[in-house]
Length: 122
Image (cartoon, rainbow, N blue to C red; front, side, top):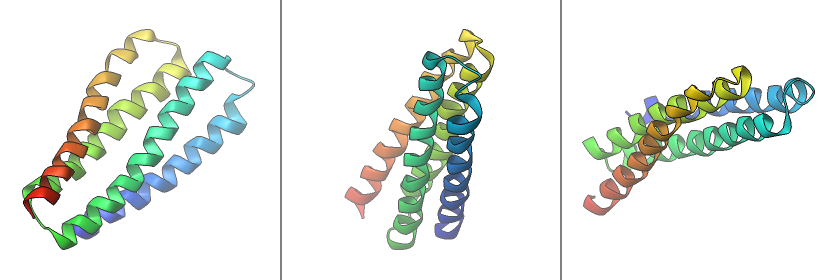
């Protein structure tokens, strides 16, 4: 599991940099400042949780447990749901997509709780 989460963190980190560059260079003149800020929030959480996945990979090698694995999968789901919904909202303007964002945020929070639990129980 350690290599899976470390690899996912590295892949999501690379994608996050590419998406951030797209937002900074490709969207600035195409969408308004409010939607650009939404997009940038998605990028910020995306990159932070890519790094969190690297930490999960390390934790999985040190304290292998179901809680560590749960943290990793919560982070993966959270990035896709939270950041993905913000990217889609910013690019399409469809406000209903924002309804998915809190679910993704909940997954990110659950990932941090699971990581704390894994460390506590180790």
